[in-house]
Length: 636
Image (tube, rainbow, N blue to C red; front, top):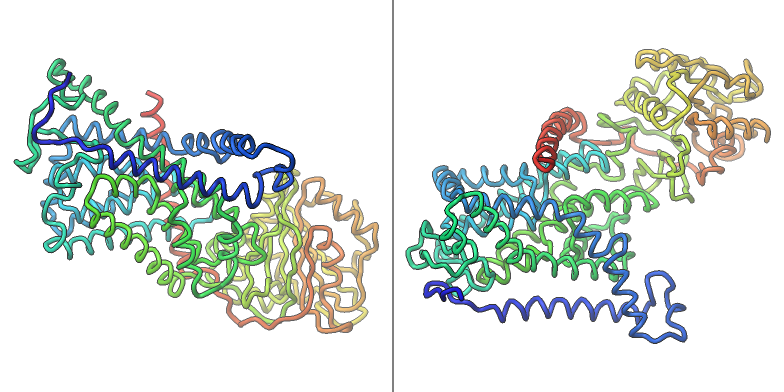
């Protein structure tokens, strides 16, 4: 039997009771939800005539093996937890924590910024960085840089960065990275200012490292009171028998897998229960309303949810796509920060291993910092009412406004890209069943000769053409047919007012042909032959133009893999209605142009869009290289 250590006492009962109570609270929530609302599939009808405990057991089984269940969550994070364990074991085996401690101490206050930067570029989430952070504190590193590392690392990593670009766009990736760094710096600076009064003594529970079961038992520990060479720890016993560093390394990794892993496992279980059985409409409703208090409610609501940095952007993308308008960006940033930084496994370890003042400090910084940066970015960085991550807005800082109709959507595949004043003006359509893309624009003036030179309208139109090309699957032909419905029978936009559009598209490598109802009075398969994009511009302001067979021809054109742009104008009564032609096609995709609205002359799209895109591209290349190196290490 291993000898008892006189320096490190063992007290595990409190920890085990804490873990058990968390599991019981989660099960109580689950039981209440099933009793009140029924099962995840059948609702209350699934309870009729059935033995309730049996139904509950089926729910537990679903919770474990379901697509977003406990096993699924473990599958999402295990590699990052493993990297954290292996990194922490390497740090402890080769005494890197002593060198890192000296380096960060050497830079003094500047060590906080260095630690935050390391946290942003590290591949570790909250579960992975904890092992490293605890080890660094255990060997005497001041809490301030450790707090910066502990807060910044769960918020960003190479993989999370690349996924954010994919899910939300380059601007979001840049801002999420900046917010992660600033959160880390804030945590470090606040801790530094409070260090002498509250955090100068030993920080572990009861003055030791017992409750977390991660006793360092290290002869190099800076605090003489806790320095020892006992063999109570498994890795120390292995080291006494096998001085080979490789063997000691794996002994320390195995030892830490259990000592930290049990917190992670319980955190995943409880977080999955909360995420599965908390009414989702509460959170989703907040993201779609431009409420002044949404960032606060989202921050508080995301605390109990086990939200991993890898899955956060994907979840936010799906929430965004279900909304009737654009995303509340302050609430969205609060979700991206507040969820990962307050992950239950991290809170469990902090609560159990450290004195409660450390836990309180971490939570206060995490919650208040999340709210502060959510509001700061929302007020000074994010333009409201636009989806800057939309493919039609890449590199676009602003577009022109004016008199337009309003887009009404009734299909889940329609995604609003701009809705100033809660009045949707631009939308994109891309289904998940393989159909090609569509773009809807309710302001025709942006496409006229006079409108092309306003703001970033040219970049916006270029993006439309490029995205429709990417969203079609009928070949690489870059030919676009610009069809103006103006027939000359009344007032409207004649083709002379659109004559600059083909030349603009030619500058971007497209071959565009402009025609109208006078030159080609009917849309036929022969007319569309050879074209891969059809842009319908509703220049006629009176009666609807298209016959049913023409509408069918355009729908077939899209079904064959080609893409559509539908451009409408304001609906100012029967004699000034620029929506009829576009609506004949749009209604088949759950979109209606209706009414009239007067938008500002300048509609901001992205404050940092032009700057963020090149920076994001360079960072993406760096992160991709990092990820490839990680994959190569994992393969070997």
